[in-house]
Image (tube, rainbow, N blue to C red; front, side, top):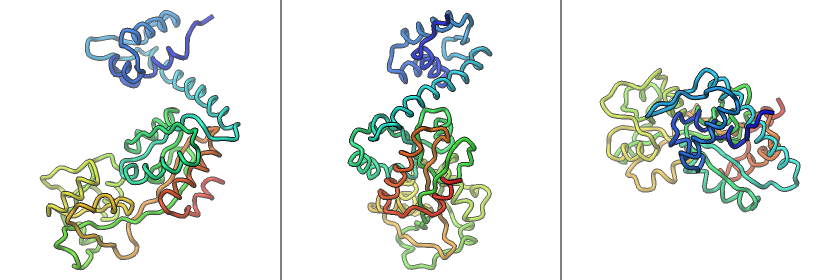
Length: 308
């Protein structure tokens, strides 16, 4: 009989993801020698080498690569067993792993956490903030229960539930207060400050201005909306920010805000989770809490998305 433990599989999964014993051990909250010993025992139990070891990093063997995908499927199924047990209970309790993109998390997270804790005090809420592609990957692999992102994500294995639409505002230096609002055609001639590559908000801003890519310039893109607004305050250029970010990001900056003429640039905020998740009913309830926290009414299309 094969003597393999779930602990060994989780350690191997961490090592496969990080490609480094030290980082994998840190992620698993164990010592590096203990992790190494567990991986060696797993190799002995399976009768094959899983890793090619070097001083700086580790690489999976062909056997290890094939096993890594099977291990992810096993661990996801095990986690869903726990979700199934939780879903059968009347109360919503235990671990809830929520992902959020950086242009949402700082503005909605405090309110969402406060409301969820008040309504479901037995929940253990764990938040992951990163860009959409990483969130989707971790969601598909079972390392997150749900994510709050800008839709669509177009991943066949996920349910998408639209929550509300949000407008983008133009942020200009304070000296521009009261001047005419530029059209999207005029925006192409202005120094538009953007988030760095990988942020979906960057792509949305470029799309509104009918730009395939950022106009060449000598400055670097920013990695946060806060930096963008401060750059505008310093007179370096103009930028767009989502409406939910305005109270936080503009309170200490010398900038002016303006709305575009219709059709205004906007994005649809929604929640996504695996179609196989036993927590679908509870996650739909949480989506209502997200709308409440944002002070929004659920978008009608979310109901159709859920029924589809």
